[in-house]
Amino acid sequence: MDEKDIFKLAIPLIAVPIAGVWLFKNHFADHNNARRLLTFNNLDESMVELDKIAQAVDLKIDNDWTLYQNLVHCTQSVLYSMTGYPENKPKIIQKTIGSLVFHQFEHQGYMRHNRNEPIPGASLIQPNGNNSDAVSDLKKAIIAFENYNKELKPHFAYGKLSKSQFASAHCMHLADHFAIMTY
Image (cartoon, rainbow, N blue to C red; front, side, top):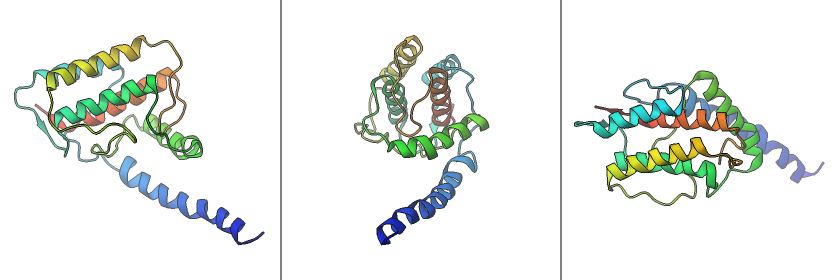
């Protein structure tokens, strides 16, 4: 075994514990400054909450992103599950850390993530836009997902998911974004 081989073996031994600490701190440890605890059992429940957000007179959002940016980001995520994500993590990450993270989210019943981080490779979302159109677009994306009967594309981080797993991922993702909004 030469130095190159030793270096190749050392990388995972160093990277995996560091990744584990980062995952715990950023995804599993707390409710990520959510204003309220929110979970959805299905996408219909997310649509009900989306209606409440759309009708809110005095919506407060505790995030660097605007309501518009949050809604467009969520729409992108739902659509990409059908069309394909612009950039994907390496398959080894999807099958190991990504799969582990998804299953932990499923087990705990909620997701926590950086709500200001765009989907890798997605187009930049401008801060201001028509919120009503963004709500409508997200509703259309959810309905399209529910009616979609072809094979779904792999999630950029979690890898291949079944339709019910993707529905769960979308529910958790939407709930995490909506949990920072009060009205």
